[in-house]
Amino acid sequence: MTSSHKYSDVTPEIQALAARSLQNCQIDPGDYRRYDVKRGLRDLNGRGVLAGLTEVSDIISKKVVDGEEIPCEGELYFRGYNIEDLVGSALREKRFGFEETAYLLMFGQLPTRSELESFTQLLSSYRTLPKNFVRDVILKSPSSDMMNSLAKCVLSIASYDDNTDDISLPNVARQCIQLIATFPLYAVYSYQAYTYKEGNSLFIHAPRPELSTAENILTLLRADSAYSFWEAHILDICLMLHAEHGGGNNSTFTTHVVTSSGTDTYSCMAAALASLKGPKHGGANIKVIQMFEDMKKEVRDWTDEEEISAYLRALLHGEAFDRAGLIYGMGHAVYSLSDPRANILRRFVETLSQEKGRSDEYALYARVERLAPQIIAHERKIYKGVAANVDFYSGFVYHMLDLPLELYTPLFAMARIAGWSAHRIEELINMGKIIRPAYKYVGAHRSYTPLDQR
Image 1: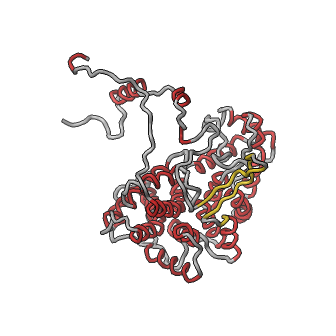
Image 2: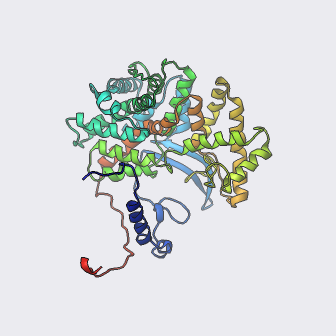
Image 3: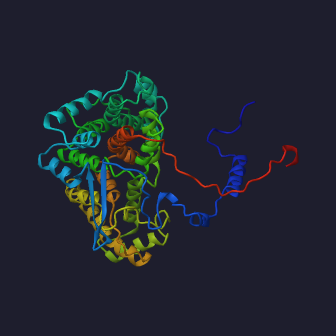
């Protein structure tokens, strides 16, 4: 018996079954308050429920003054070091900082010069794929979704590892370092395979061992492998800023949960990728770019603040762009007065926009960043503080670097694999019981009805 519908078809029968789920599976929203359930693992003030301890990174958004918590300028620390200092050091010394950041996160201390050189060389030696992997895994079934392709590669590479399930610390460290090294290859090669399927020329560049992670991303992606010093450095800064962000974000929490089950590194990272792929987590910078593309068409004069403000109000009222009622890139679950990552990026975006001949666009971004908090406060009666988050500028940076939209979230993953690795190692070292939160049953208990009596 053969099926008459395509694999991806949602048939009327499936629609009817889904409607039955909707009818029978809805929980009364009032039950969450009735049973004091922290929906989304957040309290009524939006703060995350304390679920664990970490020494990997710290986010500061409030300070205690006279016994009262008040919002403050956001700060981000990796292993106790301010991200401002890590980025500033790399820039002053005109070197790339992502590799140093990855070492710090994974091993808990800043490397010496010789340790950093050794670690960088180790990453370089692992920046290669098994023979025919590109042909057999990547080219044969290209997808338009690079995050799915990235997860497929991570799970497939497990077949080439003779010690996949060994969760001893040395073996996991080896696996994590290899994944940090190869994530750019998986993502970029998957993108090249997809564009080839769409009718474009196919080119697969080999990584260059003497180059940094950021430089290799640009080398692999561009047909001529050419890039400027400033392009590579601002991409490196983006990688540093995205490498880690506290233990409570969804994909990092996923890393802890899955690691606590005792599973292998590849399965763990595939689960983290699945979490990051969600538009509420890793895809926000794409929305920022799409919103600004719409804004540039709808706002005739990019210097007219009244016209810009009218568009922003239309966004909030669900009358512009995707009608979602959001100004993308504004606000954060933790930060209120400022996102330190956005503050750092802002300093370099103007220089890059001048180099790319896109100063007018930067000026539009700057006006929106200044006007949006005022409009949100007035329209939504939110006075706790709303500021641009890292997604507000990171998408613009990627756009100016001519990076395809399809790789924006994979770029996030290429950086965050360092933080996930650090948290996986931390969970393994301090692992106790499997993480198992409780869910209260609020349905009815029913008597079984025989099949022929229903």
